[in-house]
Image (cartoon, rainbow, N blue to C red):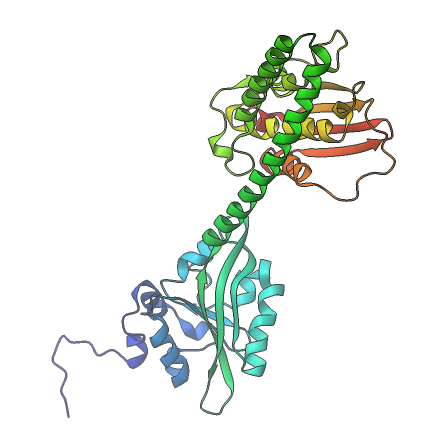
Length: 375
């Protein structure tokens, strides 16, 4: 019989489990499991301990949901994926800490627990709140059963890999390609319209060439403001400007230089911050492009009136077209330009946009919080 030297403590197997396991191993050892539905570690079944021993040192992101309450145990690699849910999620029923996605997550876990099937998916979307705000995230998942010695499923072993960054990058690339194609088509349409405008106002070939060059130069200046598009708002124009200057820059290429005022703009001085410039410029640019292709600026007698004001904490802009083709029915589908406009105003500036398709022309209203416009 082996003797114990004086001054040496003897630890029980419960105190020693699990061996190692990094931070999560230490947290498991320090916890009083007798106060949880799993009970003391000494009462844990062998297959549970074996699974935990395999999970803890793994470099893969792994969480184990055990029993009918799906009590959570996980390794160090998994902890960052749940943000501020760690470490309170350890040893607690999953419903408590994954409440915001429980309607989505529970059926997956129940399927494994009840059927013994493995659930596998790539780039599986989930809604989660892990950093104090809602997120849409993506994971590759493999949820597998952990069998006990009687042939029943005791828990669900979830091996996951977050793919949010890659999925978002791919979506950005897809939108960028679509936006580039959209802009190229619009460019040809706008140049064609500018040729027509220049022909109407020019008396000689020289005047025609000068007018067309001036419009193309103005178009380039307007394009510079919207070059980042929806893809990269943080690389917006570096200079602050005003709504008046922005509107006139965007719409200058479409003025036909006649005595009749086709485009009118009026409103108070309102500052547009360097970050907001791109979003507002894009919305105005897309609206002007649609007017050239389908609306008031596609007809010789068409006109656009733009006015803006501030009301309380909001900036309000109204865009009204007249003299274009009669609108018999409202469009029942959004083109990509309208999608870009809406994303610029709603997603990037936190505002809203309303379309009123009147028979004699479109009336568009934009509302943006002044705090977002000045950033």
